[in-house]
Each structure stands twice: as C-alpha cells, then as structure tokens.
Image (tube, rainbow, N blue to C red; front, side, top):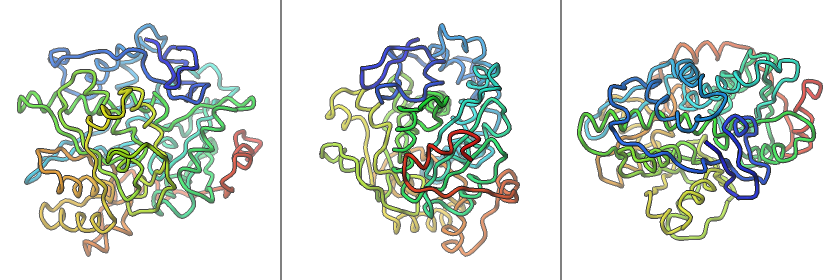
Length: 424
C-alpha cells in the first residue's frame, strides 16, 4: 500500500518510509492512498487482540518490507491486558493496563517494534524519536524505546501542566531518553516538534506523536477487537464515547468505521478547550490557545489529526455529521469522578470522567473509553473520593526511579540543541 500526504504536495511512499519520516516533507500527515474494506466475516475465528490486529493491518503492510514481520510486531506490542467492563447503564473499554498505565502504550509499543526491525542495522547512527506530550504519550514512548541502542528519544512537555506522577514517567529513563521541560503549552511543544521534523538540518528524526502512522494504525486494533466482540454478542453496532485532545484516538475509531466494521455512533468528549466543539457547532476550524484543565492530557488547542479528518471527509458538513461532540467543564469532571465511584464503585481518571460526563448529556448505549489509570492523577482523584487510589505495580516501579530533566524556552533553537547526544 502507498501513503500520501494530506496536503498533496509530497510523493506517495511505502509504509516503512512513512514510519521513518513521521511527517510528510510538505508538512502534511501521511494517510493511506486507499482504505481497505472489511466485513465481520473477515475476522471469523479470531478472538485475541494480536490476531485481530494482524488481520486488520495486513492491507496497510502489503508490499512493505515489514509485512512478513507483522504477526510478531503485533504479538510483542500487544502483550498486556485489554478490559471491556459492563457497568449499570453503560460499558467501559479500559485501555490503561499497559506498562505506563495509559492507552498510549498500544501505539508506542507497536511503533517501537516496527522501527526496531527497520533500524537494527544502524546502531552507529541512532534515529532520534521526537515526541511532544501533554502527559501520557511521552511516558509511553520512553518506555517503549528505552534501552534500544538504535534510538534516542527526545520528549518535550509543558512545564507545570502535567501531573507529578506523569512528570516522573517522563523523566525517569536511561541515557537514550532526554526530557525537555518547555516553558509553554503542549501546543508550543507540538509546534516545535513539527518544525524540527520539517527542517532536521542533518539530524535523523522521526515522530512518535499520533501524527505518526506507526502510532495511529495500531490504535485501530482495539476498536476493531471490540466492534467484532460486540457484534458477536449483541448483533448490533458499537457506539463509542471517546475522550479526545489531539484526535488520534478518535480518528482511529473513525477509520475503523470507515473501513466497514460495525461501529455506529462516535461521540467525542472534550474538556474546556473549545477548538473541536466550536467547529462541530458550525464555526470555521481555527486553532486556539490551549487552556489548562483537570484532564491535562487533553489540553490541546491545535489538534493535529483534524487534518486527517478533513482529508477523509473532504466536506466540512459531512465531517460534522459523522460524529457528535460534547465539552465538559472541570466541575463536571469532578462530579463524575465522585458519582461513578458512589454508583458503581469504579475509580476513574479525569480524562475518562469527560466521557462519563458527555454520556450523561447524550443518552444512548455508549461504550465509554477509559484512557488512563486514575493513580496517575491521585492529587485530583483522592480528595474527591476521600481515599487513596491503588497504584499498579508497573507504575509504582517507575515512580521509584531517579529523574533528570532539562528546562528550555518554548523556542525552536533551544530544542534543536538537544537533538544529538553532544547537545545534551
């Protein structure tokens, strides 16, 4: 399969080249030139996530040097639990049981497994993986690439705008991971990463944000898995309520539906950042300055993957008709954390709480997507519940590690100094 840029001014390339590049040279995002189509029968006799992921992704890997390795990539990347839990009046898809307790583990581990097979012969010239993070992405990418000699990871995150435990996850890694604490917002970090990718000045760079196909493609797998499971159990399409900031997780579900699998309604739960809710209410798309909320990993004012959505639908009215959007305040987040615990005995993180709050205003048979373990946000959750939040063993181990971080201005030149080991 070939992949093209959303901006149409870059040549079509194969999957491996797109994974290495991260961003297209014209500044656009890579998308499949043609989407495959599936029916439920294509997944007959397949039950576990790695097997369904391999079947789903096979057309995207067709003709690529990674195609013979797809089964092992899926098996190694998706070797932790995925949990579909039924509650009183909804169900929850828990995606946070990986090594860094966030849904980003799926995409980060898949990307690391794929790139490791492409870069293994180039240890003497490491590929630098750039990642801008609002909290969870950076930790997942660091965990996935830590200790792999063919890679360096450079993480950019906004100062004072991630939780303390998230910050520890960003800064507790060995020598091939560098954490840059930026005096700005996530949007500043994302802007710097895109600028570096477009003008690498001789550095070997790739991206691990959801602008990378290597992050986005595997995120489709868990939605395909649940859509197949749900259809077998209920003979009905799956309706999804997805917390979203940079739109990668939501786009993965939209792509799965576009390819023919039984997903019905898709609703986006947003926090107080209004970029998406304003567009879906009928305003022209316009990036905004991000605002800080309790759901900090969703504090995005310029969601990158909106460009892929516009490319897919071509027409803004068709795009607006394809999903529903609800915005949620910090007060509603707090209310839902307390309410869900009192009603169902479930402890949820602030991001998952946006899905519960949005579902409360959109009656339906929603499956709510839970994106992070609440233990990463104990300073928010514990006062609301009056109790401590259990810490998963993998997260607890990371929190015991020493940390190191470099403070920089929200400036391209400042970041560029740290793209090579000598810059650190």
